[in-house]
Each structure stands twice: as structure tokens, then as C-alpha cells.
Image 1 (cartoon, rainbow, N blue to C red):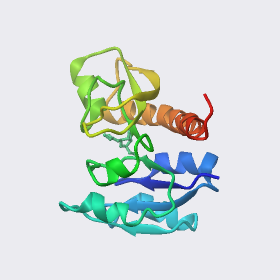
Image 2: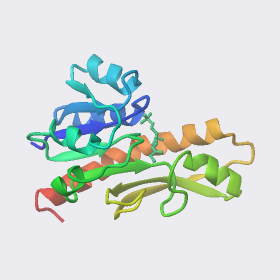
Image 3: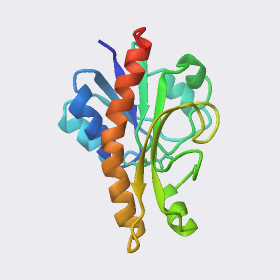
Image 4: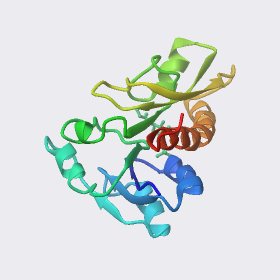
Length: 181
Ligand code: GAR
């Protein structure tokens, strides 16, 4: 069975969605925010947690905590993953992003989509590389933008899509890692 670490900075709703499918595999949650909801949720599940706040050596400090981990899932982790962590986990770090990449990388992607007056946005799960929200796409799901959408209502609907898409993408990545298609 694969061992998965989840990294997040926020409320942890994607972590919760992953727990429903991979409750036995998720063995560690790390946050850069000591007060993040994801830490409370992890504790409620009895999963070990760690806090590593920012700094130039953040990726090294995180790497030092990942002994025995096979796959890293970024779930609302608002820091760039850099070397040596990146090279230690080639094609082993996934990220969920609230847009149809390559559209709207970076922060508050749903606000960028609203401001742009596009009709459709969505979410993307992709492998993490050295860029900002670049890297090979694993799965995407579209979300139609409604005429009366606010930033909050749109993000809420994108999150519903995220909670479906992320577990499915993790399943695909694990299958690939174990030599499947
Ligand atoms: C999610 O919508 C995720 O897509 C976004 O942060 C939110 C975290 O929510 N991530 C990014 O914007 C990364 N660029 P959660 O803490 O409830 O899972």
C-alpha cells in the first residue's frame, strides 16, 4: 500500500475528500500555517501532523519529514515546491488547482476567471514541476460560470468538482506508479 503525505495551507476540504478514498494510505499532513484548518481535520482523523513555516530551506525541511512516503498531494498548499524536494519525488507530487490550466495559474484563479468574463472554468490536477501551476495534467473538470456568480459561489462550485477530481487523479497516479496503464 502506498504511503501518502498531504501538504496544505488552508481549510483542508480537499484533504477531507482524499481521506474518504485514501484513509488508510494518508499517513502525514504538513502545513506552513500553524492555524490551518487542515491540521485540525488531520488531528480529528488521528493522522500525524507537522508545521513547517516558510523560509529558504522550506523544501529541505519538508523533505526531511518524508521518510517512507511514496506520493505527495498538495491540497491548497500556497508555497512553491522547490529542490531538493522536487527532485526527490519525480512524478510523485500532485497539485489541485482551481482553473482549467494553463488558464489562470497563481492565486485566486476563480476571481481571474470571473474578471475575464469567460463562460467556463474548472479545476485541474497535475504533476508538479518547477513552474507555477505547470506540469503534466492528469485530470480536469469543467465548471460553468453562472450569470449571477460571485467569487464565493463560483469557488464553492469549483471545490465540489475538486473533491471529485482529486481522488480520481490520485487513483490514476497510483496505478501508473504501480506499473499500470
Ligand atoms: C482549493 O480550491 C485549491 O484548488 C486551491 O486552494 C483551495 C484549497 O482549499 N489551490 C490553489 O489555488 C493552488 N494554486 P481546501 O483547503 O479547502 O482544500
